[in-house]
Length: 85
Image 1 (cartoon, rainbow, N blue to C red):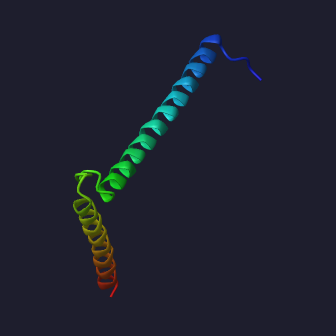
Image 2 (cartoon, rainbow, N blue to C red; image 1 turned 45 degrees about the horizontal axis):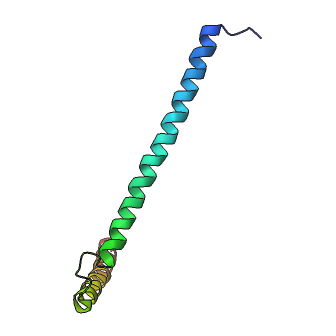
Image 3 (cartoon, helix red, strand yellow; image 1 turned 90 degrees about the vertical axis):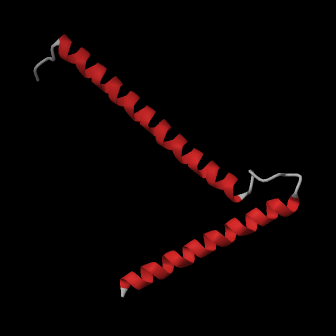
């Protein structure tokens, strides 16, 4: 087998390092945006934006947001069944 030229080996090594860096950075960005989205959803459903000194407001928001989630899932299921006819 023919020997590779030193310039080719250097370019090949540089390309491998660049590809590894891109893969590493893209995983971090994708993972962190997913984690941020999940944290925001959990915070929203837990009513972290409500006044913690007022338990009625906290539980009212939690119940309201939970019911809205159930209603959304129900409407989405109805729409899918309607479109499947």
